[in-house]
Length: 199
Image (cartoon, rainbow, N blue to C red; front, side, top):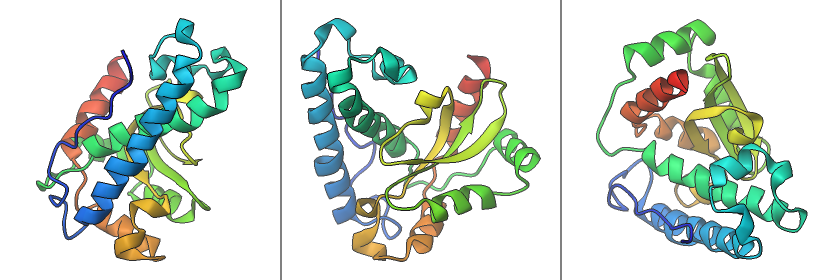
């Protein structure tokens, strides 16, 4: 049983004008597919460790040294993107009262998340995560590193690799970040938040 590339839960052009169809096609069918293929190739070398990427990446030291970085890069790339697609929606949703209250209590606004996305140098991600005490944090990670490796549970993610936005927004990342807020699936965020608090 290999890791599989998930289908997008909407059409490639469903997020327009905020995220264009060409970007979604390349992002999903090429970039994400490559992470899946490379993760499977790494796992084939050590079938004894299984294929549960969340478990493996929660403790990277348990991953055999010869495939560790490949799984951090490609396994993380798969998990990050699989979550990212679920966090986008062509249907307008609103932040729930519970999530809004938690964000206001922790940060006062979404400015911390926007800042994390704006200031991430080079390729990486901005995250809203729940820590082991059930508190919200905003972090950013480089490349395809996942918060799971830090013992954190992600509930909102923004891919700020150039491949995620460059066709439409060129080098103006802040415009892409602003557009992202128009297509967030807040229902998914609320579900992930509730799950993070109960586990």
